[in-house]
Structures are given as structure tokens and as C-alpha cells.
Image (tube, rainbow, N blue to C red; front, side):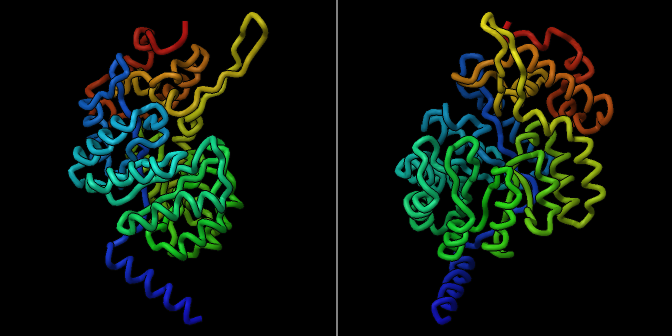
Length: 364
């Protein structure tokens, strides 16, 4: 019992010393806009940051999966993080994606984020080499949490991408031992897993949705009590996601449900699956995040540009799914997309229905 009191005292002391904050509301997993030569478009990046801040997001995640972290060099990676933080001018919080399948690289990235003045990092589970949950805790999260006690560490659990998973039991151990591990980005799609995380980690631990289509469900669930979302769709409709999350946090689930229903078509295009014909028979083509989102942003006239290889273009069938979705939103709830017109000086009634804006955005 005395040991538990000592841990509690240390936890409270460290939380006060480093002014650790809670995470709630909408954080946008920002795309990284590119020029046609696939170099980072920093002017476009600033425009996107301004759009997010004017929509009152709580924070911006720089260089997560949506920001194409796998194909940015570490120099690009670090510069984008620096610039997002610089452009935000402390008007909202910057979260830095510094995760890797190499602990040494993650430490180096986190060190750079710290030197840039950032106080929170997102650490995706180590992909491809597939450590166990125990190894993820002991050989990845612990060394970083211990080395950077002033940085808030957010594990990012997405086994569909990484092939491994930090389990709730190990998250709870980390939370007990390191006060700076006080939040998780949950993209398992497994509600039972999230419920167990809440049960084991307690009320003083934040769960953020990592799946736009599940945000409403897990924020309104009494057994999960997610406090917000790190959103992909908020690249396009930040105000709507901000409002929905705030309504839930304020206890107005009915108002939030109206927004969620209006947004539902968009929530389903983070990944777009189509069946394509080849000379050897049909194949399933999956356009994974951020391809569909960047394609739509290009069509809408927002800074985006191409993805870096090996991501390429959508098929025409995929673009048609994206277009049908965007047109449905525009025709039924145009106020959701109207801020894009105001921010980027575009006319969506033209861009959504004129074939010329599709040129170059799908495989011929």
C-alpha cells in the first residue's frame, strides 16, 4: 500500500512540475501538401494550418500516417513538424508524429520535437518488425517516456497498419509508472479493447478516437468515454468535427448525432475500395489514407498535391465514389463544406461538377 502512495505522489508531482494537460476535442491529422515534383509545399502547409486554427481545432498532428510519415525523409519530417508549430504560433497545440519501427529513430525524432518547443508526441506501434506488446512497452515506449518526462507520450494503436499491438494491460502499466503516458490514440476498431483500456487505466486517462467513423460511438459510450478524436476528415471539414466533439463533451448527444449523420458519407471515404478489371480477371483496389482525402482536397481546390510514391493515384471508379460522397454533402448540407469556399476562394458548385478538376487525379 505504501508503494502505491509513493507512486501516486510521484505521479501528481510530475504532473504539476511539467504541467501535463488533458486531451479533448478535435485534433487534425494534417496532410502534408506537396508540389507537383513531390517536394513539400510549405506555403500550402501554412494555408492549411490557418484553416484548421480558424476552425478552432484543439491541435494539429504533424506527420502522422495522414501526413505521409512513411515516405518523408527525417529531414522533411522534422522540418514539417517545425513549420506546423511555427505556423500555429501557439494558437493551437502541435502534436508531433515521431514514431518509428526503430526506437533509436523515435528517440531522435522526439528530441527534435522537444527542441522545436513541442510538448506532445504520437508514437505509432513499431510496424513490420512486429514486437510483442511487452516489447513495445519495455523497449519502445518506456525508453522514450523515461528520457522525456516533460513530453506527453501518446501511443498510437493501429494493428491493421502495423501488424502488432500495445495491449490495454501494458498501457495501464505505462500509465501507472509514467505520468506523461496519459493518452492513447485508438484505431483498433475493437470496442471491447477500448472498454478494457478505460477499465484498466481509470478516469484520469484520455482515449482519442483514431477512426472517424467510430468517434461518435466511442465518445458517447459510457464504458469507453473517449474525450476526442485525431481526425482525418477534419482536413476537409474541421468546423463540423469540432462542433460534434464539443456537443458530446457538453452532454448534447442529440445535436452531435445530427452532425454525425450529416457527415456519415464523408466518414466512409478515409479508405476507398473498388473492384477493377484486369486482363486476368477482377482485383480489389484499396485506396488507403491519405490518397482519397488528398484527391478530394485537390478537386475542391485546397492545397494538397500528389502523394509520394509508392502511393499514386486513385482509379476512376474510386474518384467517382469520392465525388458522389462530396456532392451528396454539398447538395444536402452545403454549410459543412462552405468554409472551404471562404478560406480558399473557390466555388464548389463549379469544382464538384466540372470534369476539368479531375484531370490528372486518377489512372487513365
